[in-house]
Every structure is written in structure tokens, then in C-alpha cells.
Image 1 (cartoon, rainbow, N blue to C red):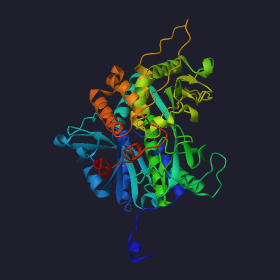
Image 2: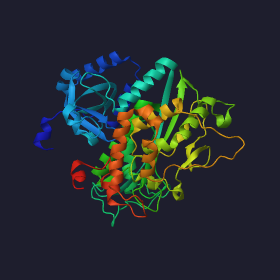
Image 3: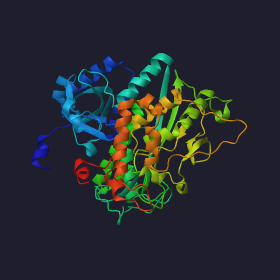
Image 4: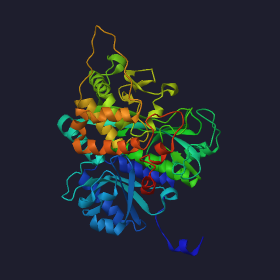
Length: 476
């Protein structure tokens, strides 16, 4: 041990104790004010915490983190500001100041070997200068919407996501991508062919251990169908908590892969010729504690409420597609040759359907939206699915005619046309958000060939919203 490390005494908690602390915090049903008081008291008492990481998500889904000194945060928690003009999709330079409103219920202790000792993390919503909900912060907008559903209709939305990704050789492999070389897989093993201690399994084990320590309650962790592909499934959560965990899941995977000299990528289709990565999104509604998507006597054990929800989502599928698949690369995944869920229909068995009905019971009955890419903004995604499923128009079927099979858009340009031309999108997102989101998606589309072709292009990787930085954009 060097002399400097002897001087430091920052908080480091073993994984088993971390899991207990985080699960207890997540199950705590204190009202908001008591939660804040309890968390603040803990931070004031625990001298070994040096910093609190606050995180938020921009309109495209990019994850941002700020570290605050603990003493400063406790003294200034009601007046935390940042420069919104530095975040793509937030404010312009002439009106740049925005506020951070801490969600104290999201308090999570962090594994020190991954995030460094002496740190905890919380999520924040974005507020305007006059402390109103910022129009382009979909975490806050989703939180407001589900609160209204709870107050007016006693409805809660429960969500879980099956997030697939790939492990490739080298750190920063996305920023260094060359289309003539492509990515290098770290394993040829797939679903049942990955050896216990190979690089893929070591990565999955380390990531799953960290997720469990952070209270994810992982249900299963495994290599996926394609070589070097992985998936770790965590349990159902309320919609906000599930979206938070999606962002943390990807952060954990990226950090652990980087420590191992590799890159975890959530590009939907990083390599041609093999399966892409999805983020199958499972969703159900509850009234009180009753799952109202379940009906023992209903078709596929789903209630009329669930079938109406499905009908509305399918009806608005073309215009929602840009939200579900928000990158140029995502449309390579919607290739029917690789189990692509690009058919606008519902089925209990056909995995080419946009929506699948998993086998379920009174507790687990749900719908699975399979056409979601892992680079989607989870808050915008869930907000839009709920708005569509609860307030959209149902499919109009002609009982005397055979329904024509419809498909999701095949390119981002086609998806942009549906999105821009949709009055429903304007209604649920607002004109400002619609313009912002389509503007950024159009910028990436314009930097890429209109035809996808058979080779993954530099532009669709280095200008991807989860990959790019200002330096890369400025080289265009």
C-alpha cells in the first residue's frame, strides 16, 4: 500500500452488504419528505462519503453525470444549477441556466471497485430557472405523467427490459471504428457455447455481481445467440425505477468492459451477418395491487384493457418507430433474416411480431414490445408507449377483409417521415420536443448514406448519439 492510500478513509462496502442496503432503500415506502430527511441525515453522519454523483438523461438518451462534494450538495441541494446549453437538445446559449432537482428516492450505494470509493449516486430531474419541469427532460415528464395516472385513476405502470449488447476487443472501439476493419469479437461462443472462464463469461459475471449489489435483483445472466453477445435480466420495477436501471445497466457494462480492456457496445447491429441487439420492453398496468392486464378467461389470458392498449400501440407504430429505433444503425437490426421484430402485429409465438404476449399468470401477465433498440431513450420510450396505449386511437379492422400485414419503417429516413408528419406525436410530445428530436435524428441521417447497404459505415457509428462527442461532430 502506498503512502497516499493510507491517508484516505473513504467508504467501501462489501457486495453482500451493498445488496442489503440497496434493496432496503428500494423497498422503503417512506413518504417523499421522510425519505429526503432520512437520506440527508445519513449523508451528514457518514463521514467516509466524499461525493454524490447526480445523473440525468438528455432528449436523445445520452447519460450525463456530475459529481458534487457532499458538504456542498447538502448545503445547496435546493439551488443546483448547470449550463443547459452544453447539453445537446437542452437550452440555447442565450437562456442556458437550468436546475437539477434531486430524486432522493433513487439513492443508491455504489461498488467502490467500479465507481471508486466514497461515492453514492442519485438521479435528478431538470427544472427551468423558475423551478418548473423542463420540457425536454423525459424522466421528469414521465414522473409527472405516472403521478397523474396514480392520482386520477389509481394506475401504476410496471416495466422490465431485456437489454442485449456486444463485447468487442479494445477500449473505445466505437470511437476508433473503421468500416473496412469492423469490430473484433472477443468470443465465438453464443447462447450455450461460452466456456465458464472465457472473457465473455468473466465480463457477464462481474457485471451481474455489480448489478445485484446495486439492488437490481437480477433473474438470469447469460451469453446471447450471437457470438460475444450478452444479456442480463433484472426484475420488474415501477416505470421510473426500471428506466433508471436501464441507464445504470449500460453504465456498469461499459465501465467493467473498459476495466477489462474491452468495449461494451449497445449499437443495435454492430456486426453484419449475425443477430443484432434489442431491448425487449415488458410492460403491464396495475390498479392498486391488481394486474389489470390479466384475465383468466381472456384471449391469451389478457384483459380487454390489455388488448385495447396493444391495438393503440400497433395503430401508432409507424410514427413511434423513430422513438423505439432512434439511430441509423437500428434499422439494420430490423432485418427479417435475423429474428427481426419488424411486423406490426401481435402474437404469442411469432418473434417477428412487434409485440409478443409472453406466457403469464395473474402476477406476470404483460406485453413485450420487441422492436425496441437498446440505444433508445428509456424515459421517452416508456412515456410514449404509455401515452399511445392509453390515449391513442385503436386499430380499425374490417371484419370482412383479410388484414394486410404492415411492417415498421426500414430506414431512419422513412421513420423520420412518419414521425414528422404525425399529429399524434405532436400531441403527446409537444411541438418543441418533436422538432428537437427530429432535428437531431435528421442530422445523423444526413451524415449517412440513404441506403444501408451490406457494410456498416463509419458515419452510423461515430455520429451515433451514445458514441459521439463534440470533437467527432466537428470533424464533419
